[in-house]
Length: 590
Image 1 (cartoon, rainbow, N blue to C red):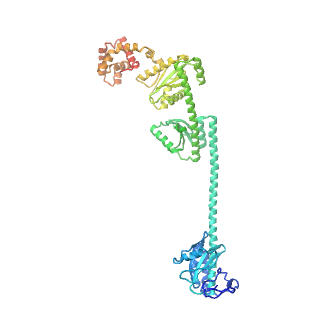
Image 2: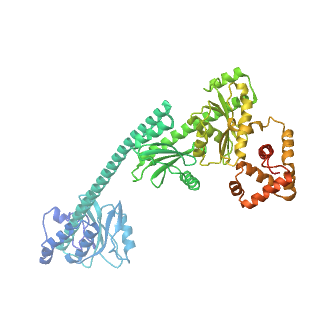
Image 3: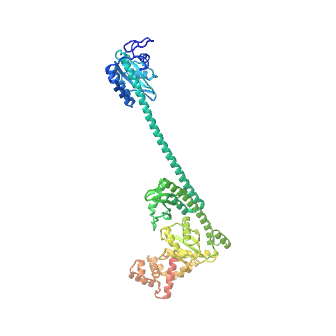
């Protein structure tokens, strides 16, 4: 093969015209085998150290290739037509490749495997692809053409530039790989540290979860109930713990900072809060509390909350809160189921007692519930205007009765709840406790006379109903009334004949009732209010919201129409009894 001047540079092979010598530059036979060296030009010898420094000072492979291509024309009649770098196993052309002949050169170079070969460059002659083969392997190609035949010295300089470029690329590639390896090692170390931290967190989390599970499982196994669960949650988290019922009233508080008195809930806002927490699921922060709904089988029984005013709760506290809410939901659901079963059995027994049953059976069944029928019993009837007389209200009445020291058997009717209680109830304790529990005062309670044996309970039930009815129809309709305190009203009950009562009322009030019916007046009611107020003109007028002169006129009309004298003691007594019977037993007006 011939050099750019066409002279043979191989002693054992014939030369070919046109092109650079074959083989790798720097391994030219004349140079490597004979050790001879053509003389260098003064200019090339002067610039060569700067070129070498420039190539080895940069670590960017594209920049090395660009510098090499820029210096090709300075060492002889050469022209750098294209440069290629090996990237991920593929030859990628340098941006300096001319657009007119890029595709032709690309196809040739992409098929090379590390050899120097002639290439055809459109519009050029003596083209050759020189492999940039260094210690690190093949790094790319330099495509060079010659305007004329180069001298041996020029050819040597080109070979030297190719060797230096390949060596510089080897250094850059090694540096890049070292940097990539360092980055990869750093990444792996970061991943390992993150993995180790995550592993530690998982171990800590698993340990904490195990502690939570064990603590709550121990509470459940011991049957500690609601207080034990909240105490365990307080110990696990360090936060104060509270439980509210479905309506926002405090059931229990564990830890410091309990408000005294506990604020009364706003029903509308509390319902809105429950819906918000239920919709979002899991613990929800509302002001200074983390709240979780106690909701077994979809039914809201209340809320469990951590008091966290400084927002210090972490994921471990949330985990403990969620699991405590689950345990509490199971506990409250279980207690509710037991209460429902107990209430049903109580109802069956009380229903039998109210209807009359065998004493031996009644004693045996009551003992099974821990209720002593051998003691003196009282029948208590509870009616609350704002509450339905359903199982929930019956459970509430039974629980409150136990809380005020009134052990009872409980049942319910359509509009009231019935208790068979041991011992005489306190005069106001049950009413006041139920008023606090329900949040309303519109309740009426009737209490029977004492009952010494179970067979007297049906009659005592009627007495309790009578006491309830008298209280409900009185001016102060809310509160507790004992049958023993009814006085005259004790004889005005369902056990008497209503025909006789009606005849009595007709005898003493008939004219007034007829007059009120014809003229749409309220003389009978005026007379009843007058007696209720003890004959006090001012109080009677105020209760009727009329003037005292109007009251005097009405009383005068009553004397004229009825023919009875209100100053006569006997007439006054009979008229007062008649108005009571008319109002309480016969339903009043109409």
